[in-house]
Amino acid sequence: MKVVEYIELWVFLLDSWKPWPTISLIWWIHGNEKCWIELLEYIKWNLKLLTGKVYGIMGNIDAIENNVRQCDVNLNRIFKDRALLTTKEKESIEFRHMQRIRKYLLLSDVCLDIHSSPIFGSPVFAICEEEMFNVAKSLGVEYICSGFAEIEPGGTDYFMYMQSKVWICLECWFHGDANAFRRARYGLEALLAHYNMLEREIFYHYQYRNIWERKKLI
Image 1: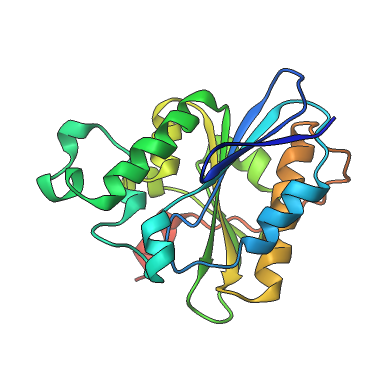
Image 2 (image 1 turned 90 degrees about the horizontal axis):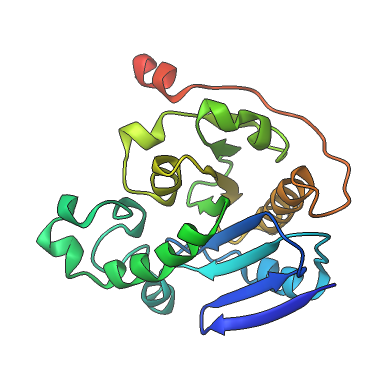
């Protein structure tokens, strides 16, 4: 069964009415990464879950409307304890969006945060920690990078990591390129299939690259 319901203006729920797992799918954390309209329409009309539910969450709405990466601060750096945030961060437009997104992350077992790059030809890669490699390697990525939860705390990845939940950031090539949509769609379907939420053959194709090793080379 497929039930699509908007539970608030920028969040929809795709529900099978069967238990476990709950996945938060986030895109547009950065307002200039606008290749996901096609993915939204595809999810709404084509995905049929066998079990579990998916929250589809659009991130930085104000930045999207102004065609900028961010309005005041980087939304993907403020998913952390309020006491650790600066006054500017707590008074920012992004802080309101963080609070809105956070409540769905608390309800979720898994988070897939989809991004794209401003650099033409950038690789398709996943960011996660080592204990999540068995999930990430099914997403059709060229590389898997780790260490970001420690190097750059405050992202959706960091928030889920601190709760001992599964999170993956999927970088899907160049902004607006048709291949980015296809990569995002493949990654999402592969993730759902990994949790038996879809019927789909999963292809394992990855090359591990540790972020700490990359730092040493710079």
